[in-house]
Image (cartoon, rainbow, N blue to C red; front, top):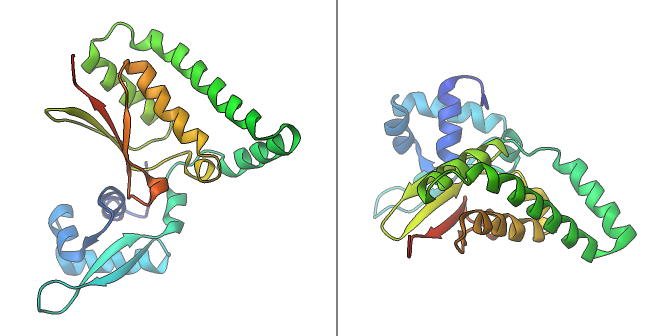
Length: 209
């Protein structure tokens, strides 16, 4: 996915998306160019309203500047036809009431589970998690999967449904149910973009694997 002019800017944007904010020095180490070079890219991104910065106290010296993505930067990442979808949902709610919205999201979840259960059936549990990660990427998520002693951690660094779920939290609830039902384990939303976190973190327990 090309999201800015030049590979370095792309890397900077992705790092800020995944971390929630970094200093120029931290970005320099991760991107592999000088702090001065990073700052030149940051200035260009700030002019486009893709990033902003805030001063943060760091010991007794001068404050450091932490760079973050702006709300406008969300438009860089895949959002699907969220505006069109919101219009349709709003019209449906006006015609048939809020319960119809819940029924619609549930129907979508049931359909996805039915379709994807067949795709995941040949795999063991670890294979199912890997295959589900790929399916979520096809849905427009930026996915990172980590395996620790107690959980599989599924980090989602953007949400194609974020604008929809801000008005209709049912969308988030059924996405989580979709993961739980496909894996046969109760997935937990430990972090959520809609709660103000920089990314969504879905944890799937390993108990009794």
